[in-house]
Length: 74
Image (cartoon, rainbow, N blue to C red; front, side, top):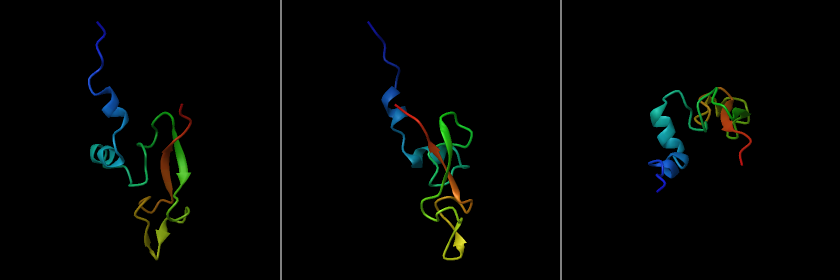
């Protein structure tokens, strides 16, 4: 009889909010913490890399102008 790893599907389907709660260093636009294998830096789609919207720091990237995204994939 094969044993299935507990919560194997739920770990793959974790929402951004759940990942952010686990790691306070994430900005809302980040898909994973910086330096995670299989991820890379991308221009923030909200502020277009400027880091500011209407004179205030972009809430999506935290004012940095970039977000961390998953790359590749199957």
